[in-house]
Every structure is written in C-alpha cells, then in structure tokens.
Image (cartoon, rainbow, N blue to C red):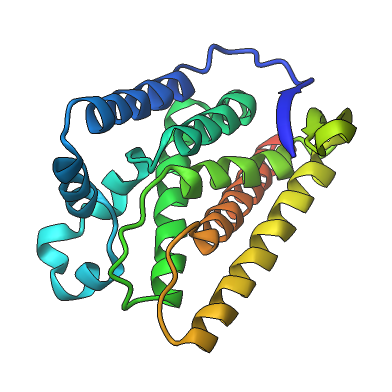
Length: 230
C-alpha cells in the first residue's frame, strides 16, 4: 500500500520535517554521486550501524547509531522513506512542536536500531536508513490521528485501486506486515544458521512502538494540564 495524501491539514509549517528531508537528500547525493563504488561501501561501513562493531569497538563507533539514520541503500529506499515522512511528519510535528518532534524522531530511530541490535547482536551487516525514526512518526500518527483518511494506492497490476483508508487501518496493516516479516526473517535465519541481509523489520517495529509510547505520554501530559484549572 502506498499513501498518496492524508486529510489532516497542518497548522504550522513543518520546518523540521523539511530539514530532515533536506539532510537526507544531501547525504544521498553525496553518497551516490560524489563517491566511487569502493568509497560508497566504505562510507556505509563507517557511518552505518554495525551491531558487531557496536560491541567490539563501541567507543570508536557509538555515534553510528545516529548517523545511520541519514544513509540509504538506493533511490527507492530513499524516496520511499522521504515520501512517508512527507505524508505523516507534518501533522506529528504540529502535535509535538518543533523541538520535541526532532527529539522524538531521533530517539525513535535509536530505539529501532537497538531492537534490531538486541535480536541480532553479532551481525556484521551495516544497518542504514531513516526507517526506524520514520516508523516512530507513524506510531505517533497512529495515536494522534486514528480516524484520519489516508488516500491509498493499492498496487495490484491491472486491478490497482485508489481507496481512502482510516489511518488506524492503514498503519495497523503496515505494522502487522512488519511484524510478520520480521518474525519470518528471524525464523529463516535460525533455520539456515546465518544472518540474512535485507530489510531491518525489527528496527521498524522498535521505532513504531517508541512513537506510540511518546505520543501516549504526550497526550497524558496534555490532559493533566487541561484539568489543572481553578
């Protein structure tokens, strides 16, 4: 399913969302157009999050848990992440405010990386991408705007359809797909006895759950402030 737009207007200009997209775009251009193929591989290994290195070389690479959020593996990976951030980020930024939004974004990305790390701590494959952080944005949207309408493309070839889905359905199905795929990848890895590269589904799950946590905490604070009137 591909989101095309939502029906919730943003009341403030989402400057942080624009800044994140700009930073990711700048790194993507540098990575793919200014480096040689060998330099790209080294760049990803140096700035991507490698679980194995995080254990054995922690003090020289701890910061990769942050820098990995700004690297992408290809054009579709980059465009897909930035499109989801564009669709859902402005409203979440509206709700949190600019400063809290960037903090939540970064922390959700870290939580996503850490969950993937916990489940596969010996992996030597670099993890890259903003998916964990953006999944946190999706988790917050899931809580803040459950009844929002998401204009959605369902690509089924000749039978493709554009429908409007409530965000609780769209994001709920998205999360179930991540969970099913993540569980399947762990099962396959245990069967074949070695790590499998590809999509870090558990980073998506960790980021999404962190986004839910922070949005629920934010809602609780707002309710408390609302009731303190004399």
